[in-house]
Image 1 (cartoon, helix red, strand yellow):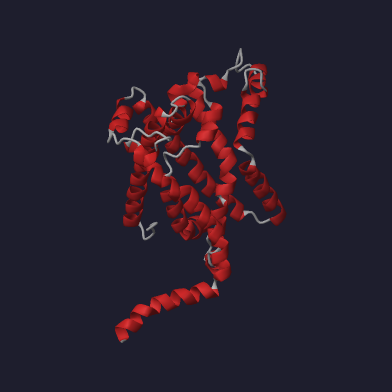
Image 2 (cartoon, helix red, strand yellow):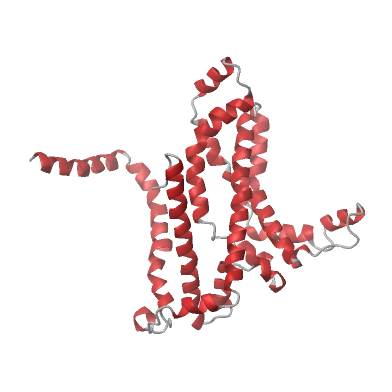
Length: 315
């Protein structure tokens, strides 16, 4: 009887929690439904990576071809260029945007004038809410060969003629990372500010009494206080290292910049939608699956390393 009661206890606890927090569960429900419909249901289509998929025959009527499409991808002369570009863009994105959000949050947290702090926060958050099309359009207008940036550089004597930034492969990564930094650093700092708000203020009061200056308080109190949050977000960032903003890349790149701009997601788009036709469905699915598996490996490896180094991990 005791064992039966112990087994039923978690069930009753779950029901009690559900009744108590039913409003919160109701708020979660729409997001959960969207996640299931748009993230989990499409996973059924991964079988197309191992078929010569034909939409008229469906998944069960299309012939199985094993690893044919994976072999085709790794034999593609552009395969390693795609992998290199995808990894470098993801790595540079983490290298610049991840610490920048932490630094901005630390600066905002130290501002002592509420009105000025709100102004800075508003200015830093606003770019995030601009659509990718608008951001790229602004960049192309400013950085065109006759744009304001080139005109200023020419008048300063730095350049003799304007540079077609969007047509030069060596400029693509700089433009992509700069736009990501400008657009996302403010919004990404919000979660760190939330973590800082949970730090016990008595720690700062004690440190002030002991003679610690602002920098010492940041190093010894603030940063350790938000370290678990930093670790979790770093794990998630590493999981998305191959998940570049392909919409922005599609708007920014051209055949002239493929050598540095073409990534797995844009290649999948061209093969599956733009030029591949029906025959490209299975191939693009296989290439996308390769990217997903590699991202999963990064997630598991980073989570393992972080859990060994500290006490925080995603799972």
